[in-house]
View 1: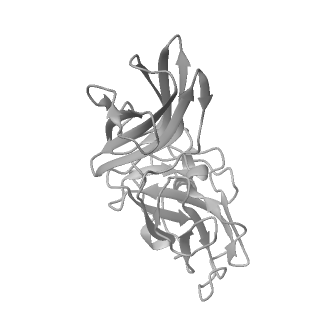
View 2: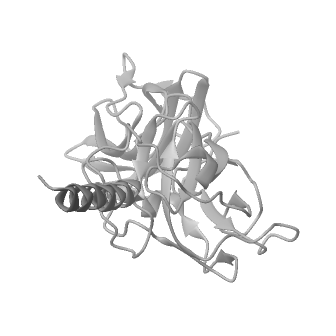
Length: 286
């Protein structure tokens, strides 16, 4: 191998090495930048520190609310849209949600639009709902739940999110133990069928059902033992049904008590009259 060949090979090695570093570091050159198979092991990648500020907000635009009741509530914004905040470098950004300790719960690199944040003139073109723009490793929208409901959100133009090249903010979800989407009763063949549906159950243990013949009268528990929660710590849909065979002619009111690790919450009432179903708006009992 002559000296010219050796020099050529050395130059090509340097070029290919630089290309590999560029691809691995994943700087955002376009929205469809390729994502790695894993983001747990970040290579050493050069990047520019990100100036400016980001913050969580709600739909009303309140800055740094930090505590929310539903995973769909936290939004992210950045730049001088918040008076006194410094602007961010223009361009597209990846976004990632982790536990405070760093475990990745969801990332836009797993979503269809991998760099969903666009910064123009130093600020977001629009606030984004964090849940809607990140995905789990299997591509499903949203992020996994943190056991203590504390989260860190990061943005970066580097898909490995190195600390020196990312901006972060923290927030917490303090949900009600359940999200109740339906609660109603109907009279069928001389029995009352009470149904309810939940779409989120956080720290929930189960349910008790109470009956009364008047709004102000005494309430009697109709289930012998607690009806256990089906989807503890999950987001989905869970349907429940209870058949009350000990009914009387007239108005029958029902209340649903949800029991969780912190106490209980009462929903209702719903009621039946001679087979007609009547759904009142869901209210929290005092």
